[in-house]
Structure formats: structure tokens, C-alpha cells
Length: 482
Image (cartoon, rainbow, N blue to C red):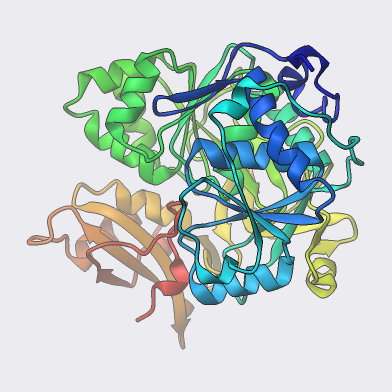
């Protein structure tokens, strides 16, 4: 079969694979595939796994992982991306819960013993990319599971979030509209491939558009500058990455030029501090665009490429997404969303699935306020970032931004702890810019009070060498204990 006669199994998601486009699709280092070559490389393992219910994917930041996930999607088999850093207990839970029959991996990868009972399918690319694709099963329903992505499990064992094909299509098409994303775009990123940001947005997004993604393998400032200078038009990252870029901009003119030449800089997975927004804008003339999503909802809102790029907000609801705030007081309420971007269920957890919804509205657990023109400002998680102190409802995020504006603060996190008088007192966790001469508690409290309001000042400051973060760069506040 020629690439042009590749079975139209999933034209709604990968049209460039169906037509056999010779345009670049994936590049990892010096290895690359066109869309036609990807269709052939993914077609062979897709034929081998056809009929399976679920397959695990050993999700290293490699070309093989991307090809393996595409193979599963073409075969209509739900893929379970596995973080290679997952501990034994968590891995055992994921395997028992999702019950995959196979594991897809790069040749030579050493897999943990827990995966030993699964049939192993190595993703061989070389010669496979030069062969004609084989016939594959018919396209399944839009509601058929595409991916099962496990949450971080901060309140218990990770839950398997079942993402249907419909959710992936709706999110990527909404981002096409919001970001004016085209086949001419070349996306650069170094995000992990076991989660929504790096895998769905960062790999499937360019493939759906018929464009190209250049994965860095591992994020480096030098890699970003190199790929953007060599034709990259978009950059995806998390706040930790943009902070490192902002720090390097003080002395790296080539980096400033590379970022200035990008069409779109996108940050997600956590709030980007306002100070880093301003440092990047001042050095490059480019504003970083923020968006808001979750594993269960994929993307909900974004600052639009053609809209006002307003630091401190995550933009407006995407096409097809409805958003409301519930239980509002002091202008802050919990975000609930509904739309075609939502997951279908927590695997094997009907109780948790039912509890997550208010009718057909998904309870995100995130708190926010709305600007008069509909821009969403995330305050933080209801469980960890909303502090009720002295009768006020206070968002940790605005205090963190105020602290980060102090020249003596490198990193900051804010939590609340029980207080007999106030209900909760505000605790600031600080990584000082100079460990030998950290700013004092009174100095930081006065700094916050002057920028925000006296009742938002931290009552106690605790100093750390580094804040605890997960693989996506999010601060793990539950690990911040007295």
C-alpha cells in the first residue's frame, strides 16, 4: 500500500498520516520521521497489538514512545503511559488497576520486574519507517478510550483517568483556534511524555495539525535556543523551565533573540510567577501565554494568540467549554466545567467518578475569580491554596507572586496552618536568593502587606534549600510540613 492509501482509521485525529504527508512530523535529536514515515513505523506495531484491550507504554522521552502511542491510537487500543520513574508500589497499583496485556518500549530499554508478565512489543523504527503501512482495524467510536492517564495520587493511590478520543480531538481543535496553530508551526519542548502536557498537547497536537514537533529529550536552555533559532515557532514549558530561561536572559543575547523570534510561548501545569512574565517580556518583547487544564478535562481556558496577553490570568474558556464558579464569596469560587473535553470515568472507581460531578459539571477543585471580561484568574487548589484567615478568603498564589517580587527571594510557596485565633495563619516557605543572608520575616511580611493588604501578610516564614516539586515542576505543598 502507498501512504496515500493508508486506511482512514482516524482521519479526525491524524489527517496528515492518512494522506501520507512528506512534511516533517517528529524529531528527537538527530532522528526524525515525516508523517508518511510515522504512518508506516506506527502501522507495524499497531497491527501486532490490534484486538488488545489496553497496552502499557514505557514512556521515555524518545521517538519510540511517540510512535508507540500513535500505534495504539491507530489500532484503537487504549494506551496507559507509564512514568519510568514510578516507584514499585505505585507501578504495581497502575498495572493491577489497568490490566494491560502488553507493554510497548524502545528496544534495549530495561524494564522493571513488575512488567515482566506482559508481552513486550519493541518499537522498531529504522526499516519499518520505509515500508508501506498495513491494514488496521476500523475506526472506533469517538467515546472509545484513547488514553488512561494516572493522576499524581496526592490523596491516595493514583486514579486512572479514561480519556476518550472525542476529548483529545475537541481540545486540540479548540487550541488550533485559540493559538492559531497551523501545519506550518514547529513546536519545541522537553516535557515528559507520560502526561497530558507533553504527550497530548506536545506530541499529538502537532501531529493533528500536520506540523512538526522537535523534542529536546531533556530540557536545556541551550536546546531551546538552538531549536527556536533553527525554525521553531512555538515553545511549550512549565514555570520551572521558564524561570530558568528568565534567569539566563540576563546574560544570553542569543537566547533573547531566539525567544523573540518565536510566534508563541506557552506555559502550563502551574502558574507562572508574574516576575518571570515581566523579565521575559522585557528581554524579548514576547509575552508568555498561559492556559488552564487538568488530566480529567484536558484544556479548559487559554489566553488567545490574538487576545490580550494578561499576566496572572489563564485566559478565557476555549471553544466548546462552559465554565462557572460555584459557592462564590469574596469574588472567589470553585471552577466547574462541562464540554466535550471531559474524561469519561475514573477506571474501576464509579464512586470517585460520581463524586467528581455536579450533574454534568465537573468539580475541578480549583478556585478562581473572573475579570469583568471573562478572563479567569486561578487562586489555587481548594484543598491546599485557599486559606481562610481572620474571616477572609485568601489565595496563596497572589501572596507567592508578591514574595517573588522581593529581590531576596528565589522561590516561594504559601500554605495555611490551623490557628486558634485566625482560623488559619499564613505560612511562607522561602528559598532565599542568598542562603547566607536571607530576608527576615518582618521584612517579608511588610513587603507583602505593602503590595496586597495587611491581612495577607505571612505570619511565619520558613527557609528551605529547595521546594519539593513533581516531574511537571509543580510544588508539592502536601510535602511542606512543620
